[in-house]
Length: 148
Length: 189
Image (cartoon, rainbow over all chains, first blue to last red; front, side, top):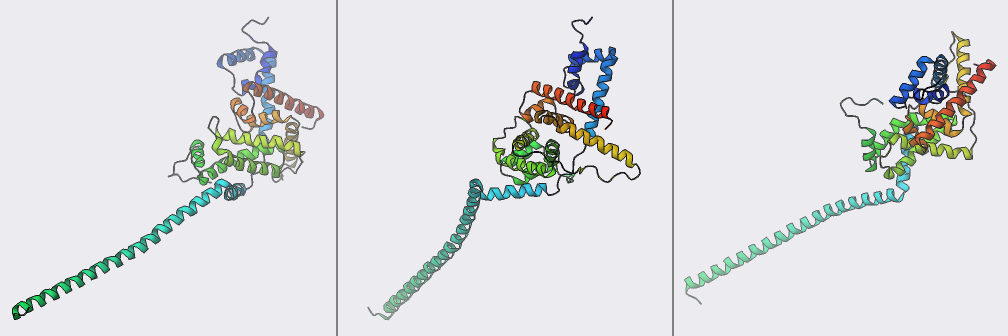
């Protein structure tokens, strides 16, 4: 007679796959282990199941192509370039490059213009100075010579 | 590929974060890590090398495109395999699986030709037993036996509950054992 806490052979065999896959809780595992300890028929069933699953494990697969990664990445890059997001990224990249080029150009242009402006101001200042010195000298000459 | 011992190896979650930020190099590393397992799974599902490679490539390209919607509720691996599973299940409606030469056996054992032949026949019968299973049973069994996935991971990969996976695996193992028992009774294996 089967007690309330013990399991019969049918119940145990239904749970053998998760038992062998270690997917059962500790209490359930214990119940099955107790049953197997006292039931040679179910122990034979466990060994047969393990042997058949072992046959499955022996079956290999072909090697994956060494070019699979290259092909995947090439397809992704191609799609990226065609997609709106990829196009947007391209436009953003070009825009950024354009901003940098314009900034450099503007720097060069305004930089040389400023230098030119500075030299013009300096030249004008010198001319003014020379003119002032010349007029001051003429005034002094007139005073010394007593002329008006 | 051997990694540089001086460079720390990133886990999948870190690579996914970088790839989501647009780092193609990080995604390439994910592809490199999972290509063999994904191809192997898909090959066991469809038994055809070129179909398996085509599906693996399509799954990885789709993963890149959908990466923004990946929230990390499952692992990247089970998410990628789920994309592959959907592609595989969809393919069955378009194409019948084709038989091809066994590419996994390598050169026959010259010293023990009879043993090599028996092994080849045994492997072929196991493949045939797997091929006869309904697709959801086959997917659950392949993920359990060859990918070493837990029932929870299998459930996430094939879009079922853990209870349904338990039931699928019970039926799959029973069916495979029945087919192998018939082969033994006929003396084929």
